[in-house]
Length: 243
Image (cartoon, rainbow, N blue to C red; front, side, top):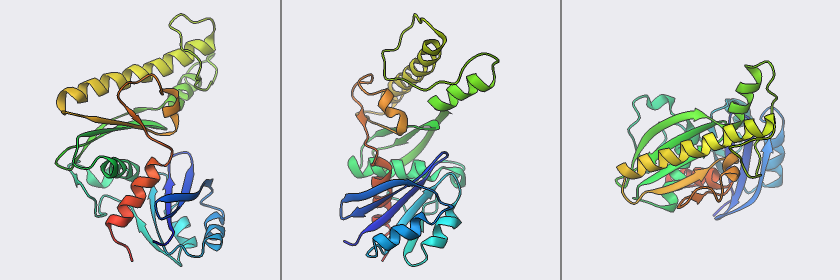
């Protein structure tokens, strides 16, 4: 198999990964407004196709640098291995489709809940009869910290922590971290419980950049690697059999 390019443009950053067969040989954050992708193709001239998922725009800027290869732009109109049941199909995020595809690739024809913890927290269900069901969206950790800082006079902006979280806090930073992170933790626990009552033998995937702050705090969950999104994109590209 030739090397293929997968691109994920999120709300805060853009990333790419180059696959050789099943393995990622290079992955980095990049600037869609620079010549990063042009330089990438110079380093990997064997790349002849790729796929791009974007919720943050900049698709045309990327495609302008990738004219020499065949690119699939992921959308609700792309051929997928599951059926979309979302009423407003044109508004569903391409990132959510890629994550569901990654879950399908790992656990095909099974009930799966995919929770992505990034700028926002998204919940998606893939049923054992291959239907994608949309779920809630709530603010991610960084958005919660930012909102409290920007909409109050005295609360500082802080970052999540891997330290033990307390319900009796000694200072403002601890109060904010416990409020946000324990709030997210218990929100996710409750959603998992609710979905588990509705869907039998439910697989639970936790993905996204902030999932590291929940590891060892949730049982019976698969904490996806940072390549989870890229694996989903590659799966969709192969499913569409772009030559």
